[in-house]
Length: 292
Image 1 (tube, rainbow, N blue to C red):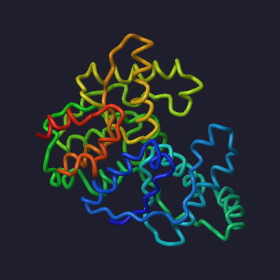
Image 2: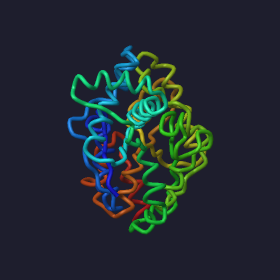
Image 3: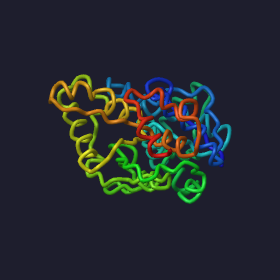
Image 4: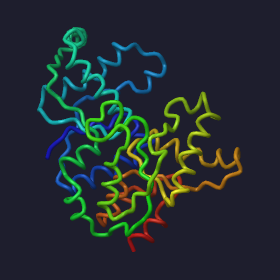
């Protein structure tokens, strides 16, 4: 199983532990990754700053065109913001010939052309539908032994297209957690937005959002929260001290990437492969207790 891996900007920065854990965990399942040559940012961040719709389309279409010119692999986008930007543009290009022409007129300036032959997929989609929970379960050597984990979906990893999971009652992350031996706790707020990129200008509002999400997870018995989005991971993890000061709470909830849990359950090195040492709130104690 070979794929283009488009990790975008965040996985080279605040989400580095996502990328570092994703590669060994997924490669252990037979997935092979190739980087898109000379890839560029998907534009998720500059879209907040008022970048034009055409600029966002061309940014993403350029990555798609480069990939298509080399091989017809699916693009796997682990970052939910990258995923939603790229799949949105891909849908618009494939569904509207006028958009395809407009984008290709721009791409022609760089000697590129996109025909619409690439599929964009989320990492959960590939793990669930290509690899499958049975193969993941077979690879586990240190099961998470019923560790109660709240699988946080957020607002971008399945919506709006719902290509691999329900947009109303998503279950894919829960099934993947269960394949690792964990207990995926019921989590009604699993799709509540964490604040995303408006966190800094709307700090008070977003702190309340994160508080609501984390308290819901704790009230349902979770010992930690898993995610597949670097923006969500940052917002849920880094602002717990601020929430505690503002509300008098005592939040200290580890936020981990699904791929970090995979690497741990596969018996890999918790530092080198799972990159748990890069988390702000240390999850090692809880994980070691579960895996023995």
